[in-house]
Image 1: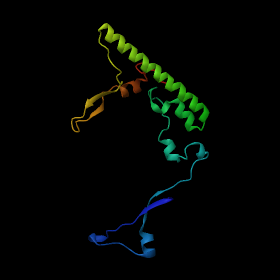
Image 2: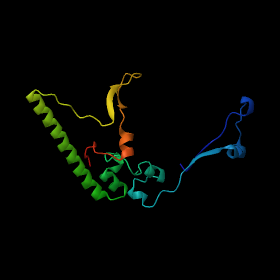
Image 3: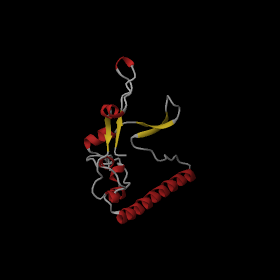
Length: 158
């Protein structure tokens, strides 16, 4: 699809405004038009410029921001082999982190001591009062950390 146009079907005073032939074409309103793909699009999933900017890097974000994932960045730049190697490294790091948490939980159980499972920094899991579904509710703190550029509470996930 190269573009998307709409045509009004309700005229003045609520009457039918449908037209025929060339009159209908002239009254259509252009809502969207496809732009040319960026250079090297074949190496970037054939994403449009808009799609590429949706994940654009932003300065000052937490080091845990998913836009900073090194494997993702490499892939977006068309560096596939490096991206795959980096993804393997990150997955192994995640596995080791999970195993460490599991071992800590097991030791706490054996010792009879309380163990706090993983908790997100800025969200807590709660029941939504309207839907009654479990969801993540913002608990605060992110914007204060961003303003101060103090990310010392963030884990090293990459």
